[in-house]
Image 1 (cartoon, one colour):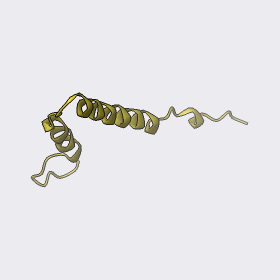
Image 2 (cartoon, rainbow, N blue to C red):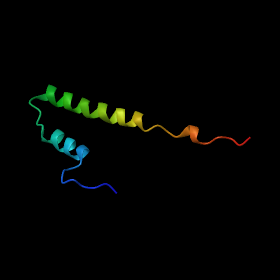
Image 3 (cartoon, helix red, strand yellow):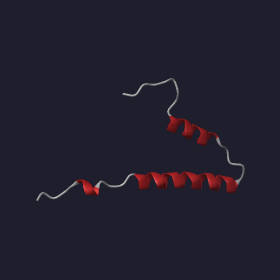
Length: 58
């Protein structure tokens, strides 16, 4: 287990900061949504299927 050093989780604090941002207008809201979509897409790319883990026995 990791030791808690009295600080919040880095990912959680980033989410809270992102939720605190209020869009100024519709264009800004669209940019914020696109940033969110880009992060989700990159996360999906980082979680590849483990297809190369099974090797046929010789």
